[in-house]
Length: 319
Image (cartoon, rainbow, N blue to C red; front, top):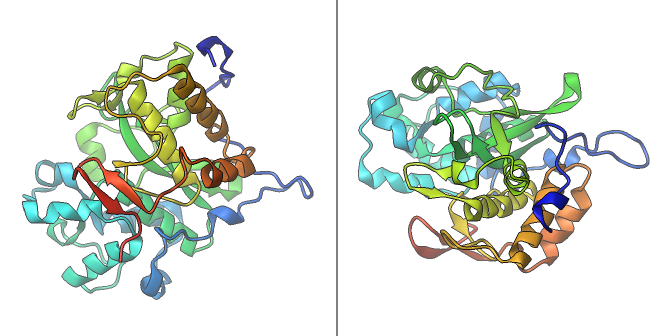
């Protein structure tokens, strides 16, 4: 599909509600159910005492996780190299295993920086999903790009999208940003309800770039010098997987995801256009998203993925 034919939304905005054709009411149950990645498993009883509101959830998560790349400059903890493997944990159950092995106090007790599990934005998103879903709140992960890391750039990022029942809309929760993180980056927006022009979903980023409104070179990971349309395409596939309850790591690669700096063929562009249009409104396109992910070999989840950081094949489900 050529760029001029892409149906761009009038504004950067959240998706509408998933509507049941028979009741005309939002169908939110699929996003309340725990996935194989978000389930706390045998640790579920520990989640009963945790708060279920977004502000409370963020506070708990911030006391249990520490962001790998700012551990020392932001929190004064020089992270041992041996602990960096923690950022490759794929499931909430293993996150809690790792946490309790170091400090077995209740989960509402904030750990000091050295007592937290090492992760990246994905882990803050995943643990937030787990707590919200445990308390019956619809929530889903979204892959995309934050405009609030480096001025003029959109950095690869993952956040939690939760159903704001009192306003009947989806909202973005970025639980990575505690007071320390926000102060260091000069964050001014509400991290419990992030504006959709501050976090662009992979779909929005792709469509904006394909329409010529934004430059693909603005999107990616600045410190790794990984940027471009190929990077956004990979994020599209991971966002599709995450919307289907496969909240994999941001560097897990399988199927049609392009290699670094790859030039996308017309056929590639057309397929990614399709994914972008479907994930632009996951609610309206719920069934189509499920069918695409389940049946199309180009995006269907495999038993193993290529961990691009470790440069090796790994099993998706741990254990």
